[in-house]
Image (cartoon, rainbow over all chains, first blue to last red; front, side, top):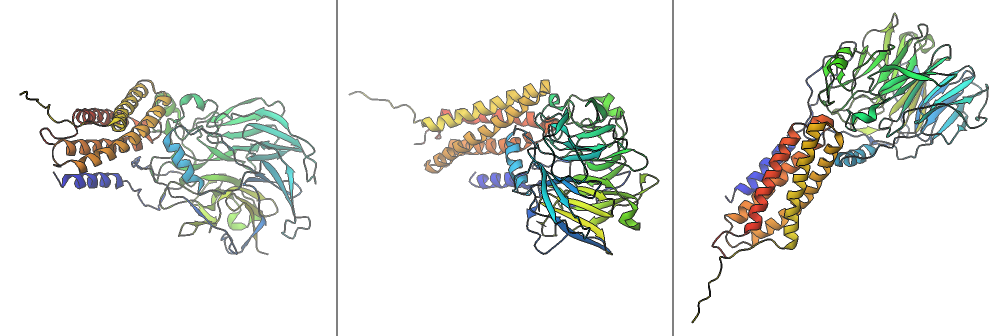
Length: 430
Length: 142
């Protein structure tokens, strides 16, 4: 009896510690990823970035390319837009008002906050200008402020569209303008209750008639209740004139960036998938967004892989779910996507760039880089290639976290970095 | 000459110890009821309530465990009830902690393990509190 006290305590301690995540750096990427069995240890694995300054360092880019910081000291830059005259707009902010419902939310959110910037979101658009074309953006000025966590940006027909976390708004824009002429006009309200996933991504059809807004789910996997998922986890098509809107595609858990494919006019998205099914589930993905289709969330993932956490279950929706086009790997947190152009150089002429913010719940961590997915005949073809790396080193020191990526038609890739509050510009070396 | 007969020596929890022990039972039992409600309705708020009640149960149970430990150390003979009371309370607390982690999973991932654990933890806390409230010392030992 005397020995049983420490023995019991010891066996309980062992029971509790037997919960480490599997360390596996090989992640299924590409059009047909293998889906391992779901797993969830007692304690979810968390591996948080340890922020450090860039100092003299810069991201690593391929040989023959240069990278420069064209704007610093921003207030959480997320997405960028290149205007016709070459000026760059940067959306800055941080949104979300999701209540902490469980003890877990209180603990997890304080841990996750360690991997993010301490700066307060700007709720504004900053304009960057390189008037003489020497690659130095000598002008950094506030274009518009008092916005509500602006994220998605689009431009068409002299109108600048901004997706705030609660509404899609519009500014009239004249070429060369450095400051908005007034408060924006509301095009339509956007679903904003709770805003667990608050970012509203945005793009515009080639004719400027329709806007597409990506609206993330209000939970990881319905743990805030099914009722709050109305009008969530979908892409809206919005009439630019009237603001009338309808679901364009559904079941997309968190469509964090949208892009229009040049030529075909096909809408593409990067989507962040669900957590807590293991280090190699569920793959975040790049996909063409097909009108009227359902992509699975919350009932299933990657086609018909049922997620039993979403109850009551819905076999009809599971059966209707279609598979996305291309896996980017689980937990990479793709937050930016844009189509490349021949001006980016032969190797990167045809395909998309994807900004990967990086994982917080996987060991070893993944993402923390910008990749290039080559295309052929308008479809993803082949393995993804690293384009900008060095955001996180092997010791976990994290200098930056990529968000939006935008291709400048003059032959440059603009990368927003929301940890270093910097905008990077990658160009071909002359 | 009259002979006074003394009742068998009993030692029961003091007010604070008793509140902690009784609260443990109530909180874990409340969590169990909420788990049953979630299991039957899929309404997530029940599961949220259960999570907080378990967290509260762990606080009460953890403090009661300190009293149980002190009681064990102060007992003249460290056998029988003082040991059982401490051990059962420790197991209740540890399984309660496991249950708290189980309840930290998202949505239906809590089920069915969370409900099963809530049943076990509630029963354990009932038995343990019964023992503790009856007597903190082994019978016949002063």
